[in-house]
Length: 322
Length: 258
Image (cartoon, rainbow over all chains, first blue to last red; front, side, top):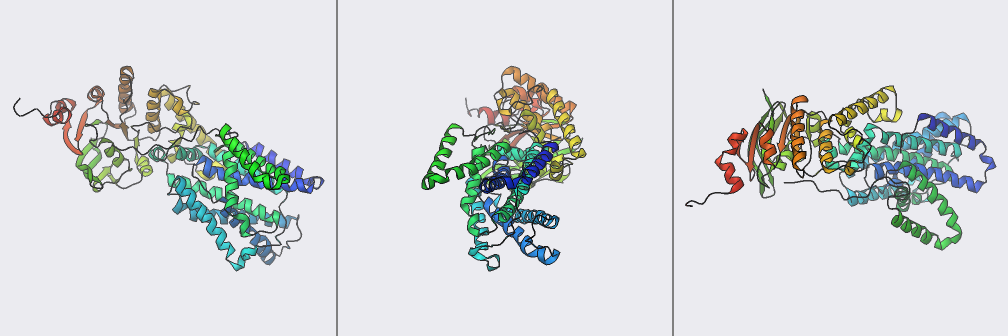
């Protein structure tokens, strides 16, 4: 994908503000699906930086989402009323809006920090091994939350102020796409793609592959944390079970379906899968079967993804030896 | 002329196998040195040691008065050693332009934060990089191909692109691993001219592993001969050609009483 000019970002933010002003005209059910779609776009596009662009298969995205969700809820529910004396129930005021933005940012930073801690040891591994380790870390985060009474344990946390609206969701989705598309388009960002294509050659070109992988992981985790914050203030009730392994798999599926390394394709797949999930709700028990079948057919017909440009999954050549 | 690179009693062992034994040699600044030897002599191992892919079991490697043994490959590249690979390793999903562009990554003044904010300094650096890449591509006859996928180029062009990519890291010392492999005679002659150009115009010292003796004897000023991980000869092409040990390594020993 070509770079996004700043005007496009501004336009997207203004558009989401305008839609948001008329959001009471939209059917509640439709609005909810729209917001969920926006959150999924952020998750999929950010995971794409790790799995698609940098080629490091991570299965722990839901864990970082959980960190962001719990951290941001802690701020809006406890820190803001105590420190800034802002009542969580008066939503829509400037005060709560700023608190919410701050909470999302800090949630993202908390997730990025955990991402760094997880990334440094695990990114020495490749391929299947990395997938298993990230899966393990994602589960560890969930289980730790589940067993911490201060975080509500398995019952979760309820009564989170419902700050998330159409504007916040789509403005942040636009920011995510803007940041990741522009990052990858830059000379620095081309390093991520080089790491994916050939690590040995990338090192020989002076690219510190470990650093690049960790950076991709941290940025991905940051946006997952932001998405987690949005999700928490949308659902208003979070449990550790909501951030389990299956949630991570959902996001991975969006990335693969959209086309590894295609920002727009992945955003498109996030929309498609979220909406499809709802449309198939009336078929109840057949839903997952139909869902799986669509994926299988898709992978047979278009293995590179909907808008994928990454040319084939060639096996990495082994390091040359005399 | 001073020593640019010095290998000091370098030994590397993979398990029970000694791939290189007490290897000593120097490369002086500005030279074009060939490293030859039969298959399995340890030539690519020497390259992998110099570029940091392997760490010597014993011995030291000194580049521009700095010990580089044990540094990471990316660090060594930033010290000024560029390389190409025996089996071409271009970035397959990137364009020709981007392949060269990634090699400029380590010298970016505007890092990740700037790539997100996209200020004026960042944009001017990006356009500097663009013109530097285009200049290199033009110099090596790859202009007009910059938007092609690197792996869709003809074989000879891919080899050349690998050299261009290595040059984009602005090396003091360039290591070429069998640059003539798979080339036809005309391409080989072009390649020899190209390597000379790199040595003279860019003032880059070149260390070359090559099997094609015409290429090696044609352009190298100094030749180091390896056999079974041991240096058996060193000198000018004429000296090496008449060296008994070298002939023995390549052609075998004459029977005692023929």
